[in-house]
Image (tube, rainbow, N blue to C red; front, side, top):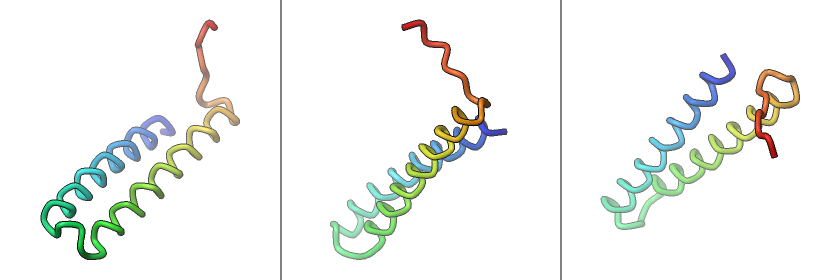
Length: 67
């Protein structure tokens, strides 16, 4: 369930990225929609990093890196 949540948050972050690009092109940088898309993208990224950190802390995510 945690991995699905992380993937969904990453997809939502990418969707917010493209909506910000759309608002940048359409509004030419004027307006609050671009700022709102940026705020949403930053909030989603912070939530994703927090979930990843919590997953490692709780043992639900395990790193199998050999180095």
